[in-house]
Image 1 (cartoon, rainbow, N blue to C red):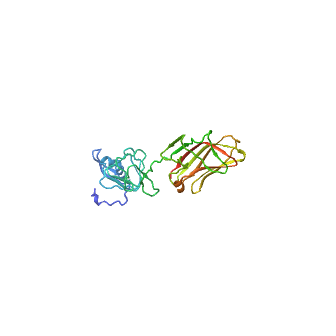
Image 2: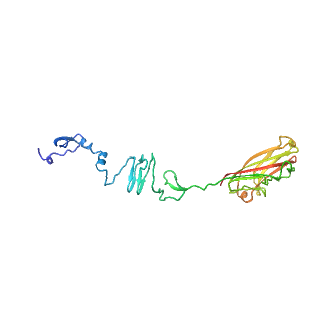
Image 3: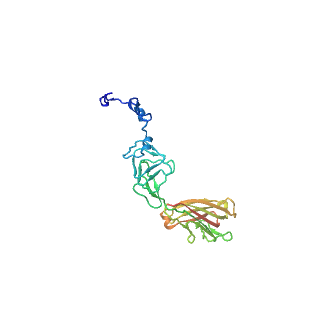
Length: 295
């Protein structure tokens, strides 16, 4: 047998090529081995079983699926995805930088989370700014209670009603003495001046107005109910009639929406009634005001 170095070099190596060697499991007798058979021994699991350590960099361009990923320094420059990370899968003493991290189980974090170079402040949350934009820290607005007020008038009753003469507009009064309740700290009505109030410009409100009214000439009379402020801008205007007839109490329960502009904030507003065709008696007046939107 000539020296191995004198044989010609095979320029096209395949898995079916033969290599001569010794069979360690059979008293070292000489045998042929295929290149494919040798390669089958060198899978990744065999490498890990042998040493489980890599001293050089590893570059992965596809997806990585793992049940545990532990990093003593940093896992960085990921061009694909890290997926199927479960339980205490990410345990990094430094940092992990990745284009995308998909968690199908539980992600346990023992350290801080940074977004756009910041750890945020107490009470903040991570907020998406949209596709292609970095995550940012944001703060929830403080809780605001819109609130409501109820005022029941004690001045005008069935025994002593408010007399509204034809063609003489009057403010629909409410002294709020009989019953007053509220939810929230804001007050939306001033009984002393019979003024409806607003807190912020562009707030919106709902007012429920309840009262009883008796007309001396029901068939030929009506009553206009309106809300206006010093600037003369009418926010509410409705015509009410008396279908029950002369001298019979008519129950009115009206619900209106309105908003607050700068004039409303400065001067407030009042509910007014004006009667046409008769004299009308009004009593048992109730205001229920809800602040439904805080500007």
